[in-house]
Picture 1 (spheres, rainbow, N blue to C red):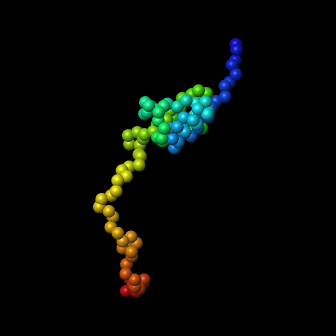
Picture 2: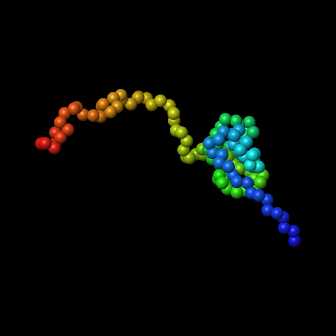
Length: 111
């Protein structure tokens, strides 16, 4: 029986937060391939940011393995929310509006 030598495993890098181009280069440097199920045109994707990956960073996988990355949050997984200005605007005044008139600080206790 012939025993083949164990091939060294590749450690999955942290890709979340990287742009698509940087994620591809990082994975390629570790001998891994990337696949993006939510981007059929992944080869042409450049500036979108990775928001999720599988396997998790630090996992040991065989060389030439595929790491899956996503660029959009799924339904109900959060995101940035609406970034439009609020109308009507909150009232002005800040702390000055919250403070009472100056006077005796112990007025209520002295009674």
